[in-house]
Structures are given as structure tokens and as C-alpha cells.
Image (cartoon, rainbow, N blue to C red; front, side):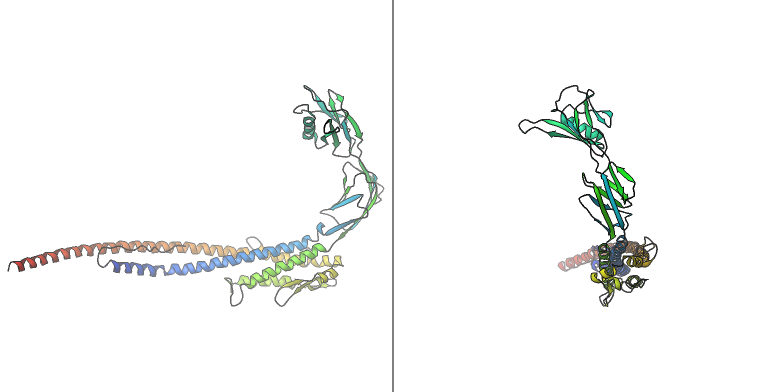
Length: 442
């Protein structure tokens, strides 16, 4: 925003203060439009702040709506294992309700080996490593056990891990290199020195064998983690054999938490809109955007879609109070959640039907980039503010030019008057001197 210059006119005539008053009054009158524009800009800035606060609250509400949809995804499922000592379960995208069994017919093993004798470092030694009978070159920094193990891990760490162990005592250490395959397979890991084997094979590696859901088909894996269905992975315990059953079901806690979050986000949006109503209404009082946002919230809270015994949100524990706030009753929800199929049908999905379709479409109308109610209103507000800034700047330039012009005119007038005053004083002085002289010679 511009501001009117308050430069003081400095003249030398007796009328300089009068000239300053003329300049100040003219500039003050010319600045009245700037004052009005600045008041408008203050209002626009206040509206911008209010819109940003509303945008934040409705973004949170939109995220809460998405959270309801996400609660029907794989995160809502839980798995119960009949024998956790045999395996554990990890659920992911694609998981579905159902019963599964895994019969581990062979536990599988990681191949291991260890150096036969204490490691002896030397010079100009040529090391190699043998994996599944294939020999590969090693290029350790030196021939110490630590350097050879580091070279193995750097080049072949995806297949075998090397560690240096002390099989002696603290006083008389005896270092050897231990190798273990990273997959359950007959890797037979061996370190070779000049083509001679240095390792004793301790455990022969073998793949896991298993049967899923009594299919009669034996599966085989070099990993302890088995993907037995979409979104369902099991990790076998070391050495475990036998059968374990898995029951996957949808839990209600994820949806319950999502509905509680939705109620909280909804209430925050209601409270933010409430600031624009009443005797102490904010900057958006009377703006149509407030009514449109209020209607959007009402659309969500009064949804009356039906699925089975569910009609509207109230049977799910979301009750709309007289104050316009939603409250979530978890006990009421838990009763409705026992019929998971009906609950899921009621909510539907964001792109098909049900509450989620309506809520998502409503949030898109409010928040869609560029075209949504709030983004478009904020853009209009920003454009209005920019236009006011330009008008204020132009008006201030005109006032500044007026002040400069008046100062130049008043300076010229003051200089002329000052010159005339000097001439007057000079002539008056001369006449006074002549008068005094004439009186002295009478």
C-alpha cells in the first residue's frame, strides 16, 4: 500500500506557513480515495485469511472422508494363526476374508560353512569363493580374515554373508570365517586358496516345501516368507514343520476410528463456518460461499442412503445434534458393525455408490483445484487484492505528483513574495534613513 508523503514546505516569506497549509489540504483531499481503497484492501485481506482457514478445515474433512474409504482396505483385516510357533502372517493390499492352511513338509535350511583351521594371513595369496559349485574371484584389500570377509559381503552379499568369529579365547584368539547363505538352497559356500578348499560344510542348504489348503500340490521356496495368496504372506519359523491354519477377517476398529475422525473434522469445519455468522461475524459475513459450504456440510450429515437395516448415519453411531455437531457413539457402531456386509454396502466406494460416493463428490465440488468452490473463491479474492494494490499504487503516484507540483508552485510564489518583501524592506529602509537624516539637519 502507498502512503502520502508528509514533506514540509520550507519557504522564506511570511506566507510560507499558509502555503504549507494549502499543500497539505490539497494532498489530504486527493488522498481520500486511497483511504477508501486501503479500507477495501483490509477487508479483502481479512476475507483471504478466513478463506484459508476454511480451506484448511475442509481439507482435513476431505482427508477424513478418504480415511473412511481406506478403512475398508487391507488395513481393516486381521489374521489369527492357530500355531504362532510355526509361522507369522503379514497382510497387504489385496487381502480378503477367508481361511487358509499351510502344511510345512520340509523346514528348509540355510547352507553354512566355517574355516577348518585358524585363519592365517600371508602375502600374494589368491582367494576365490565357490557358490553352488561356481567359482568367483575375490579381491580383498589384504589377506586378513576381516578383509576377505568384507570382499565377500561387498561382491556376493546378496547370496551369502561372511562373518569373522573367534573360536578361541580372549587370551588366545583363533579367528575363522563363517559363511551362511541368504536363501535356503544347496549353496555349499566355500572359500578357496589357490583352488584348495578352506571351509568345512556344516549345514546343507535345502528349500522349504509346503502344501497350501490341502491342495495336494507341493510348493517349494528358497525363502522363509511365502506368498500364499494376494495380500497374504506367511513367514515360517526356523525349523518349523507341520500344519498351521490362518483365519483372515475384517475388523471394525479401523472403520470406527475413521468415523470418529470424520466427526471431529466435520465439527471443526462447522465451528470455522460459525465464525462467519451472528453479531460478531467475520470477514465473510454475507458472502454466498458461507451458505454454499454450510449446504455442503448439511449434505454429508443428513445423508439418508439405505442398505439393509441401515438408513442414514445415525444407526452407525453418527448423530447430528441441534448445535450442528456430529457425535460418534462407539457402542452403537459396534452393534451395526456386526453385519459387515451391510455396513460396507452402505458406505459403498468413492467412485461407485453409497455415502463415500456422495461425500467424495461433495468434497470435490468444494476443493477441486481451480474449479472447486474454495479454490475459485480464493483466486477471485487474490485477483481482487492484486487489483486494489495496483489502484492504490496508481492513486499514490498521482498524489505524489500533485504534491511535488504544488510544492514547486508554492516555492515559486514564496520566492517571488520573499523578493518583493526584500525590496519593500530596502525601500522602506531608505525612506526611513532619509527621514531620520532630514530631522537631524533642521
